[in-house]
View: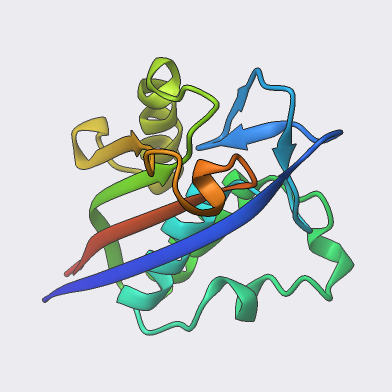
Length: 159
């Protein structure tokens, strides 16, 4: 059985926070605002995986009202989601995601993002694809106010 999931997330860019995307700390003068480390890419991936497995969404599992997740490492959240999938006998088949921003430049970091995500999902790096695009200076991402990410995944029943 193959199931498909889609995830989307957005976080505002602010001064005084690190810019962590795909588990990679990116040198930039702004970072993403949020309750956890605000890793927009990993949050979109978590939502895609949770959706594919009909387990709700990231807000249900890691609510911002719960201080347990204050400044949480989103890689740990992703590993938790993968463990939840395992309880339903699902494994990650593939993930394809796009980060949408004008800056910072992400292409030098996408390979490490893929390495991180593959490790956290217990899959081969060939099953992960991360892309970056701009909105040609249109909208909130184009004005540099925030960063968005979309993710699509497939999961398969294991056994």
